[in-house]
Amino acid sequence: MNHTLSVFVEDKPGVLARVSSLLARRGFNIHSLAVGPSHEDGMSKMTIVVEAPELEQVKKQLHKLVNVVKITELEPDQSIEREVMLVRVSAASGRRSDVLEIASIFKAVAVDVGHNSICFQVAGEPAKINDFLELVRPYGVIDLVKSGRVALARDTKGKQPRLRAVN
Image (cartoon, rainbow, N blue to C red; front, top):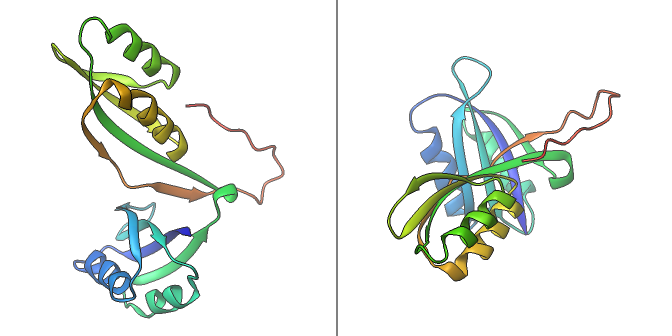
């Protein structure tokens, strides 16, 4: 089972290496790992998607690392998850309009157009990214890169209705 962890860490050299090696030593497969600055100076936030049957022991071990400040497991229905993908699709002149039509449905942006291919940028929920990829795969995927997943917990304390942006 995949679990998404949000790990608040001090922005110090070697933190990423210590966190990833701890997970590797415990035999957990990291599906995605994204790190970037947080809202506080000198702090970073890691979003880690890891395959594990039970995470309690992993969370306890991560808390022992000096630079780890806070760990939160994000439940899919209580969090916002996004990915970005760049994918180059074969698009000969006779099939180009079909590929562009699929792209428009998913709000994919053509960021590079060549003689025989189009490179799209797609951003959104992981399921949206995967659905787009499966629909363009029959045309021929030439190259592909995905970002790590980033996620934040939803605001559940307010009494305002939850609105979802469509992208």
